[in-house]
Image (cartoon, one colour):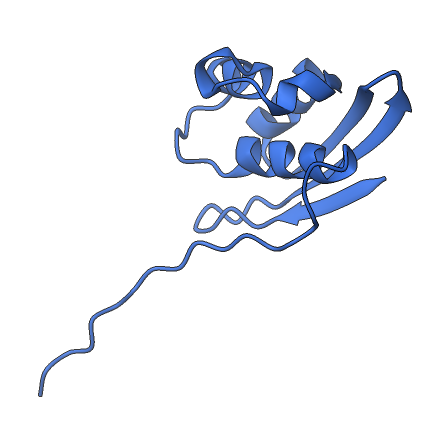
Length: 108
């Protein structure tokens, strides 16, 4: 079982994703979120397959369903779900992902 927490930033609507292998290259997906749109996405992708980790963004069920469920195009949840799938499938190691803004120091 692979569990991740996603703190999406300014909206503050945190999400927890749990992905568990069910055998035969199938995985259950459980999403709990403070965001109604992300909860809806979780219901739409309750099961993924190993091959979903390899599909292009335009063909990937997580991004396709995300496109229908999420209004905020830069929401990091779909990417997080796929990262967790990769780890649970043994395709990647569990390493944190981070996006940081670089702020120029003000000149005095």
